[in-house]
Length: 150
Image (tube, rainbow, N blue to C red; front, top):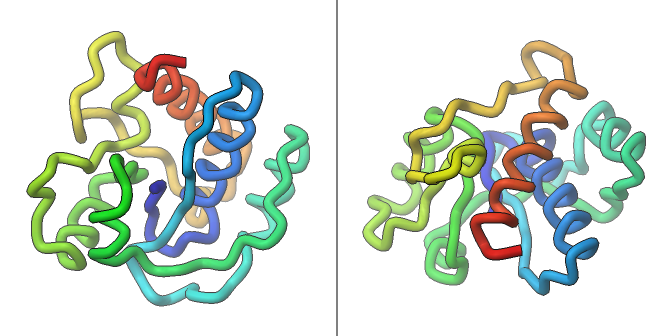
């Protein structure tokens, strides 16, 4: 489960990038995304985020923002956040990461990944550079696939 603040930019970008990469290597993974906030629930992916995915041949049709829940924490093996701010808000929703499932996406760009030690994925909502964010997400997703053995 990929998680960001609103589930309209970074986490759905990560969801669809990871689905694309997993399909290319034949990895059968259940991949979704969600938000820590309720602000964008029901909204589709932000158009500039959809555009940058499309430029890389990745579709994002059908996405609707939703909020992360305790049931999600229980259902998923990993919860991959985009930044420290997401971790703080996630803990408000679930109480604690008692099963050590929470990672930051850029934790996976090192040879020895360690939970929540990586740098933050930059938020294109504020800086507008969706290409930069796409590159960070792609790098993190490739590292995550490697970490998972693909």
